[in-house]
Image (cartoon, rainbow, N blue to C red; front, side, top):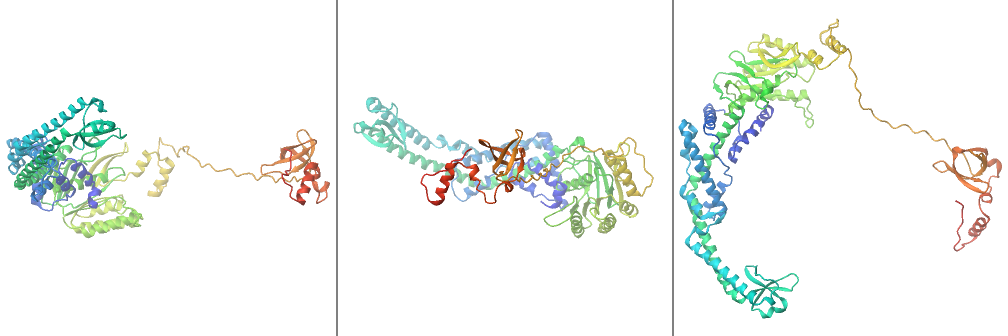
Amino acid sequence: MNREERILEFDKIKQIWMELAFTQKAKQKIEDMVPYLSEIELTAALRETTESCALLEKCGNPPIVSLNGMEEIIAIASRGECLAPSQLEQVKTALVAVSRLMSYLERGKAYNNALAYYVENLDDLEELKREIGEAVYNDEVADRASSMLWDIRQNIQRSEEKMREKAEQIIRSNKECMSDCFSTSRNGHICIPVKKEYKYKISGSVIDKSASGNTLFMEPLSSAKYYEQLQQLKLEEEDEVKRILYTLTVLTDSYAEALLQNIRTMEKLDFAFSKGKLSLLYKGCAPKMIQERAIRLTNARHPLLPKESCIPLNFSIGEDIRGIVITGPNTGGKTVAIKTVALCCMMAQCGLHVLCEKAEICMCSNFLCDIGDGQNLSENLSTFSAHITNVLDILKRINSESLVIMDELGSGTDPQEGMGIAVAILEELKKSNALFLVTTHYPEIKTFAKKEEGIINAKMAFDAEKLKPLYQLVIGEAGESCALQIARRLGMPADMLNLAMKAAYGTEKEQSFEGIPRTLEKTSSAHIKRNKPQKKRKEITFRRGDSVMVFPDKKVGIVCEEADDKGILRVQLPGKKIRINYKRIKLLVAAEKLYPEDYDFSIIFDTVANRKLRHQMERKYVEGAMLQYEE
């Protein structure tokens, strides 16, 4: 798929077109389709599309089916290998489809349709179809494929019945030895379920045993002789089946050329009818291909846009006019207009009908497009760089038979320099003598197009009163961008509009914008939630031995444990120790004023027993010693 196909969305047309075909070859041909450059080939392709439309309307959809795998089957037969029953049935199914298609085309002859005469290239190969139909059924060789096979299979059936009868007789006569009352099949042998302890009472061979080992599956001696006979019959059956399959394979190979001709013809008809189905889907018309360098479209529509929302386009270029410069408001349909023209031309040159009431189109040697910003971060291309890269590539490939479309000519850079580049590009397009359509917003380009021979202005119509685009192309008149009017319609306030007018036109006097607010009305929006800065905690200055007052009881105590990281300290009160937050106490006398520097506070806060035990532990190891503290 080339770049122009993607830009013009012809790739999407192809996807829809491919869904209307059945055979893989037709789908592949659609995918590989490029515009014809031969006038003879294009004329034939368009005639084929028109005839397929007519036949579809008269006779309905043709009974074409997918023939995937048929060529491989024919190749297998040609190599001398044996075809499987399923493959032979596939050959028969294909021949049935050919017969139905031949009947369809015979009906089409009544309308003198050229496609109907492809029936002469088809052959239903009645003999091959009949032979396969009689010999193969449901992916198996049928019993009646030959008299010998019928006899063999009858004998096989009788042998199997005899084997089972003998087994059932033994079960009935030895019920006490059996773990069940019916026979079963093990590895092709008819077996009876014998209890382990009666193994030697029954004459026969052990073929299998149960999971517990308590039941033995034995083939009775009276059934064994029929088993050997059955194996011989099955070998004979296998040989006869192979003989029949080889006979049918050789017969298929003898018709290989006719089968391949059927396949090629059905694939060609599938491709032709897919074009007709696409035309009927879009309600297209056959374009008239003209030799003069001109394009004339009447009520053209873009095939991918809904009919109810797509305004018909009337377009004409040619004779003395080789280029059209289209101006008009944003969202006015300029890009859709130029893409519709180019897409109609590309579809027509691929042998398809176009979505128009009438179309006269010249052939083009190539279609060259620059639409979209083309920005590519991986290749470090800005919008303007991408435009210039594409434009230079177009100017290298352009010739007098090209069709060129360019959107937003000279955009993406400084307006003054962009305008100059746009003029230079237009001059090169004019020199090439190609047909070209460009869109722009630069007023200088409109002036350039007005005075240059071979170039004409066009505009997309705009309802200034309702401030709505009409999506209609008017050739011969230059349009306005209507940016301020559109901005006003979309809600831009008066103050911003006045400022925009002054910046654009240098207007000092404010315009009157009645009925719209002067400023933007702000709407509520989400805000960032930031973490509040944590207050620095006041440093706790209480030390062990400080005399403090405890609130709200106003009791006096002594700090015996300093505050932890949560601000909780321990205070010795008369007869008890309590834990309390530092905020609920007040310093009365600091410890350094009450006690010497190295004072042993255990005298105050520890028990006599603990003090004595600690002194002992400091001198030597005391087994089982443990200090006791109050909670």
